[in-house]
Length: 227
Image 1 (cartoon, rainbow, N blue to C red):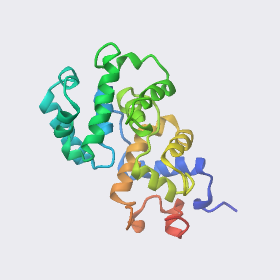
Image 2: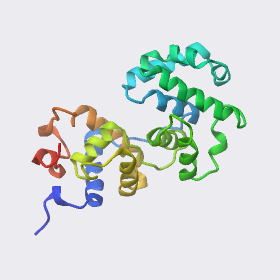
Image 3: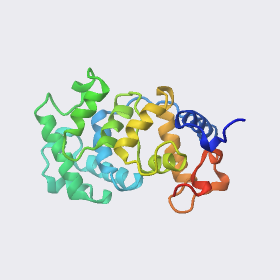
Image 4: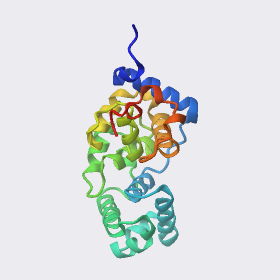
């Protein structure tokens, strides 16, 4: 007798769930990589805020300073004023200032010097910068360098726990390790984007639309087993 879908192993579930999400939201085609430094700064701005607010803050930053060299000459206070819409402006300005100070010791304001390094080493170097966490470093790898790494944000973390892909008490750091192992490289880009879309459109934090969920059969939350 076949095991019920919600009791399948996380590895088996992961492939099935991502297939169902791709069927609902579409298979995302990998876009051309963005400027890695832009991805890094946008990643800092995205912490604890919406994409709308972080996008507005990034545009304000670029409108105010124009390019990385000009931004490198800005004070932390000037940066904070430009990114006010992202929230936690002083904290994020300090992180951006730390990035620029770090790059000032390298060969110009670019992350191109990291391209020849493997992904774990790139992540290690980026995370050594104060204010740059695992999610932000991995955003650079995925969207800036086109590497097959899985990125966990708030939506991905919630959806993954409800589906039983990771343990209920799993933190974001451990979730990156577990999901990076579970999700095939070929599905990491589209899977990341579709899990975010699923979290926004269906698997809401407080009132998920379980009846409309394409992954319902694999879900532990709908059975009252996890929050």
